[in-house]
Amino acid sequence: MEVFNYLVFPGFLFATVAGLLTWWLDRKVTARVQYRVGPPWYQTFADVVKLMGKEVLIPENARKTGFLLAPIVALSASALVATMIGVFNMNWSAGFVGDIIVFWYILTIPSIMLILGAAASGGPLSSVGSSREIKMLLAYEVPFIIVITMIIFKADTLSFGGIIKYQAGHGPILYSVSGVIGFIVALLCVQAKLGLVPFDAPEAETELGGGILYDYSGAALGAFKLAKAMLFYTLPIFMISLFWGGVQIGNGLGILWAVLKYLLIIVLITLIRNTNPRLRIDQIMKFFWGKLTLLAIVAFILSVLGI
Image 1 (cartoon, helix red, strand yellow):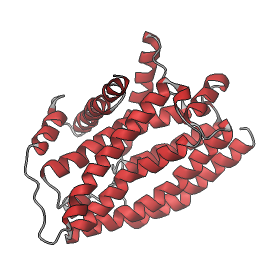
Image 2 (cartoon, helix red, strand yellow):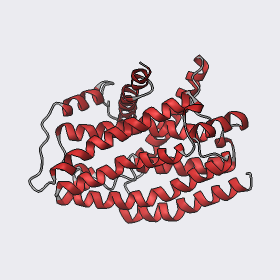
Image 3 (spheres, one colour):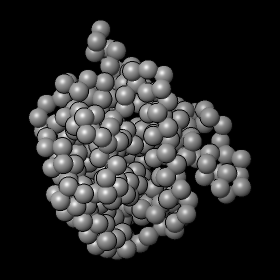
């Protein structure tokens, strides 16, 4: 019964609903910025349901096993990390030593599955998108790892629940100079993990016609879209947990404060998406390996100094 409850809240079902609503909010705000009406609140649900009911077309040159397995693994990983982060926020002692490293690892799986699935499709545009995704993954993970290491050093624990507990006793990490810098770095890395402008070179709809997802259709494409929607919910919660004291929903004010923190991060992500042009893949790599990695190192040094 307890496992079933976790599947509903804060697990797969809750993450699905929250992720699709967040995706709708992003699309709605984007439409308003562009002087359009935008979709109704149920549009993202309708899109995924429609895709799930359609046939999966397999390219002639595709390696079927890898092509079909990739979206399933990506969706499973997104659901797993969403559930674990939700449960560990509700119960700090539910985690284990080193679980923060496990979270980081699982959060990379959807991107890796995109790479493997696109490579298995055998299509030229998918291959270009896969190549770009590999380079981008190697680029943004460097500053992201440095920032996570900074938080581990500051909280003196490898436990996700321990990091939240540390902030409960010492205040949110975000309320320090190193925390602010680390938060900015992590926010931009999350933007890249979600594949949003200006870091959408692997998909690049106006250039590659979908790129890394070009050869996917039907339920397989729906699984990738749903995995991305779930990450749209999970990654902001992950950031709130690491930098902003976690999600405490013990009372009405706690729920309101958690929602406000979540919406603020979503607004920042949407603003970045709508105020910047797409970067070339070489520009993305220079940005993450250069400026952002340097900024992450500065944050780490300031953290060591207690600033």
